[in-house]
Image (cartoon, rainbow, N blue to C red; front, side, top):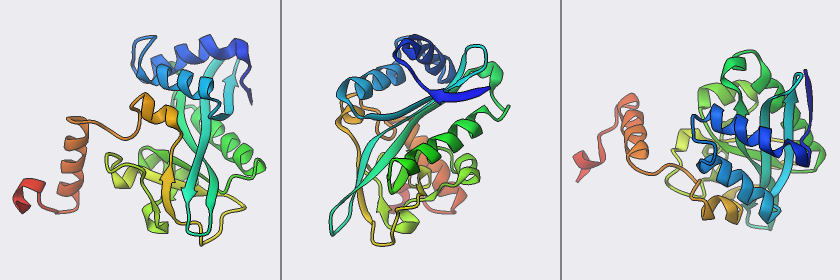
Amino acid sequence: MEIRAAHAEDEPPIEAIVARAFGEEPDGPVVHMIRALNESGATQISLVADDDGIVGHVQLSTAWIDARPRLVDALTLTPLSVVPERQRQGIGTRLLEEALTAADERGAAAVLLEGDPDYYSRHGFTSAVSLNVLRPSLRIPEPGFQIARLSSYEDWMTGYVIYPDALWKTDMVGLRDPRLASIENALRINANLPYAADRE
């Protein structure tokens, strides 16, 4: 299996893989997000896993950390997709490793993402808020907002994260209700915290 840069002719199979991996229709929200990122020029890295055909894909787009001295160049990782029949075979891990290497070579200070902390913590990511790198939206569950620090990262690089316009225009930042409410309540239960209504 080869991890390589995506080419223009790879766009249709990438979209098909993304739709299948996310359980969406072929023209679903994540596919619309990818198109918007590509069309706006926000996409910086797009890699595919090729094993006699494309079986996985990862994309990184422009982002910034609004630190006190200046804006810091970072990247946001979304989406990471592997076709369902090839999941749990290490393809996602290979894509993540290559994506972080490519981001580091570009000089990005960090890679940020929204995802399962149990999974991504095994691949170099940690809680962003623990480093005072703050979510661009309160709709992102705090444990899921994570960062991988790269070679050029320095301790002063703290502040709010700024996402590219394409993520806002396609409404792909964080979660909307009812998914957000159920996740927040599950987090409160796990942390033995009261529901929001209990505090009113």
